[in-house]
Image (cartoon, rainbow, N blue to C red; front, top):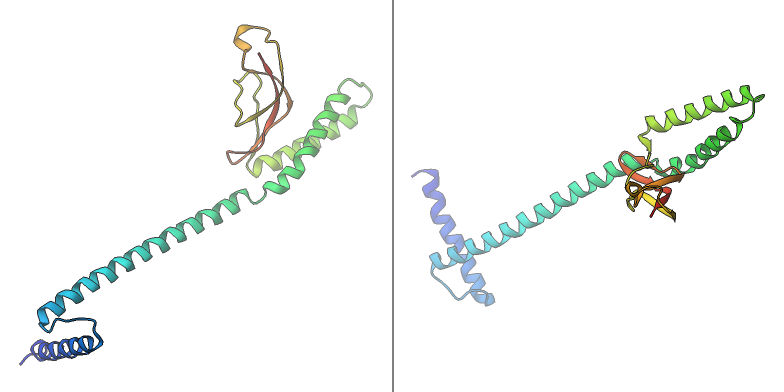
Length: 183
């Protein structure tokens, strides 16, 4: 007899023993081995389906966790950048104010260099300024401070003036541009 043939009777005896135990426990009424096998096959299919669902849920959890981790890495410096942006605004205002003065050229050159350096650092970290002047107003990118009469028909609903620049970090808006809109 081959090994498989020796195993068959043992398996059938195990099934009969299990069926008898189950019957005593009130779980199954069937004593026919084929009925018992059919019931166990159904049970195996149900357990397999549960396993597949659990595996799919775990796989979704793993992917979601990886995405959250990647977003955390990608946008992790957002808080720091938001604290630097007011400094950039102040530097830009100072430069605009000192351009009218004639004897402060060295100060202006120094401020220009500092501003360029800060802008270079921000750009290397994925921060890009928005230049919305003349664009159509979009509430996802702009905060309208006020409306002014449009100088022409083509300026209606468009950004007439930028009061405070907006910035994006890797394509995500981290600060909306504060604008004046023509109406």
